[in-house]
Length: 466
Image (cartoon, rainbow, N blue to C red; front, top):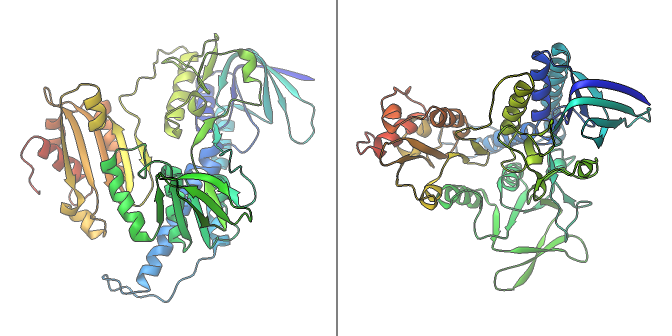
């Protein structure tokens, strides 16, 4: 068996792993990255990027269908149609360019990439088996960084296979189903369910809790629920899935009163969450401290074993690509001798539904639970000129600030295109802005960002446009 050695060995080439490898190589650290699939991990290949591509295509198709009717803008088109095979090819082209770019950056910076599946021997040794039958490679290291990501969670009553698919299959449809049942009204289920509905599919969403986006506060989820109904998405809230019927062409559900019914389905998308990928590659041999299914880490991403680090989804919530990237960069710099700690003021989270939802920092409910005396103010997009010109006047921007010193502790928004406000929200919180700072900053007109200015003014008691 061939044996190699390196200073840093990274298991997993997703956003966290490849960023860590690039940064470590930039710092002159001998670095090897092991990846069994495509570089870029879930995010670039079967998650963030392809889902946003499909969402964009669906929005454009819906817009064309809208213009085929009576549009107030005066635009008229003939009846449009969707070539889903071409849509998927376009999406795959974007993915290919991005993953190719990651490979180029790793090579340019001097990080070695070994394609194959890693199995941990001990905290300093990993064996890599390639899928093409080549002899396994044994790699020894000084530092081991675990970045294996996560995997979709399957329901025991409805395992993946046949009509039952995960988000992976939903992002690469050969054809569009006539009827799609989505199990789970979290961000993955609603993002893909909305996209499929805009592509002309009859979509039904089943959620065990009583409202959509249960991980977000109710005020943010309410405009999304209203939009789903306008779009023709059927919602079955407070219902649990019992499995497929005997014929396999319908989903059996039970409501809160015990009543049972069946929802016809050509395809069933199970989107009830993801779990850290901790099984099947020897992680248990390290006997690391765990938080449930997740690897336990400190504020430098150190595990309970010396010089073994972990980042990203394998460490639990929040399972966000940008969190993994920030952690990966930090670990590389710590190994390189720099003093770093992972202590962000906030990690923005975005739900790319229609309307979109952004949460950064603390919500009103969270501050109340923490015993903080806070001011809360929101500014509706119905009073924002740019939102009106975008035909997107639903939703709002909300600010949460301490009453005593006016330090902002949270920003939230729901509306068309508000994902682009996430950077401004994060920057505001990281810099420790006060309401007066936001209110005293000139915001360009007309933009959606003016809603931040107005929300701050409203919290201070002198809003100008509402």
